[in-house]
Amino acid sequence: MRCGDHKTQPTGGDRVAAEAISRREFLRVAAAALCAAAGLGAGLGSLAVGCDGGRRTSNTTATIPGGVTTTGSVDVTTVSPSTSTTVTAGPPTGSALKIGVVSARSGRLALSGKADDWWIELVAEARPDGVWCRDGLLHPLRLITRDNGSDPGLAAQTAVKLITEDRVDVVLCSGSADLVNPVADQAEALKCPCLCSLVDWRRFVHERETAPDRPVRWAYAHAIGLEDIFANFIAMWDQLETNKKVGLIFPDTADGRAWADADNGLLRIAEEAGYEVVSTSPYATPATDLTPYISEIAKAGCEICCGAPGAMDLILLWRQSLEQGYRPKALTIGGLLSASHVLQAMGAGARNMTAESLWQPDRPFRDSITGMTCRTLAEDYMNKTGDQWTSALAQYSGFEWAYDIFERVENPGSRTEFIEQTRKTSLETCLGPIDLIVPVDTSDAAKSRRPADNVYKAPVGGVQWVAGDTFEFEPRLVTNVDSVDLVVTDTVRPMEYES
Image 1: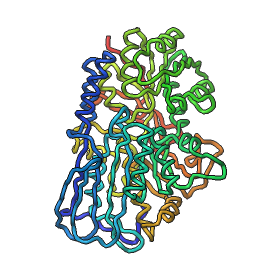
Image 2 (image 1 turned 45 degrees about the vertical axis):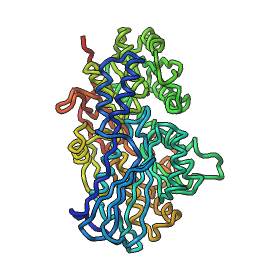
Image 3 (image 1 turned 135 degrees about the horizontal axis):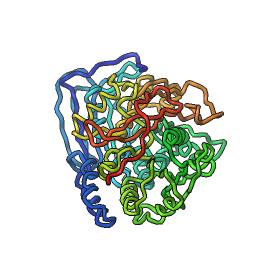
Image 4 (image 1 turned 180 degrees about the horizontal axis):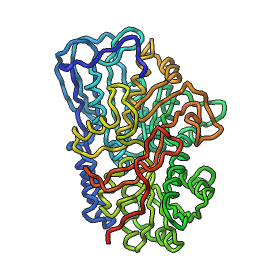
């Protein structure tokens, strides 16, 4: 962990609890409507419950003040469209620094924002006084979280409001490039630092570079590589005895098209690895009937089924596959940050589904702010929420990154200096290392951790979701292609189906 010239440890009496936000009522109503439309029955109820934290969804502002006193009062007020949580703990010694957070707290990708309230509270408890910058002053931190509604247009609008109205010093965002890129584009246009995580680096870079003479300057990503995901998929399939026929089912979305891309998608990589691929045409999402696509790969005799559907589409794919009697030896699904919650809705018969691992508790990394291991972070989340951990916890790493940069700046109000220090990042986070000092290596994206100037890739593995000891489904790491720091704990087994 990199540090500034000064640092204080949190004092017990100055802890801040940011208001917990949840989506129980929203998802319960949405689940009921989707169940009625798709005939999913009671299974979806567990998905809705798995997303909840007990209260209404809103935007949140949490202030972590400076000062060294250990007494304070909490004044909570509700306004539209944000909820303000302010703590008074004596006069700050430096100006407040604002961090804007854009995440999916409602809509089809709401599960990806599931851990936001947890990490905001963790930050408030761990650093109640704010951050020491290199100007020698203790600066309070103000976190402003806004919902993108799982909508690219709203994500862009939200970013503009954070930058122009809230006047944040940096914007954090994470997840699908559909939601990250609009935020990064606005940050670029308005010259505001933007730190992104868990986004496909190719889409983040190539869809946003409008001209060779205008390189990306303000947005950086601790990204993932689809090439790493695909390599782990192949490695998992290689462990099974199959006829090496793979059926691909992808949605007609930007993410789906990236997975099916002729040059860098899964089809080419699977064929090069010796697999026969049946690639169905893209389907419209949200899906209402996937039987034609299932029939196509079933008739072709595909013993491996792979796709990147959203949560609702996956549940529909699962139900209709069982209805048609299609039971592949391997069901491999990509793009689900909260796979465990979807699996609970699918039922016990979904045991041994395989997927990529973007984060899980047994990763060998530590949180750079609290020093907690990934295991301890997961336990903290489960103790506070009563829910199973989710890979979305790793979005907390974006705050770790921003905090580290603030510790290194001499003029905290300078966006230019913030970016200069961003480019000097060498930090271990709960998601893994970020090293923007190492040279860019474009020779082999699968081997390179820094395939672009504004990107550093996080490690990716392959997991199989098996019957758990504590929860109904728990992941076992079964592959670690090009990520040797990740420890493989099991081997791949065929799917298990209830008779």
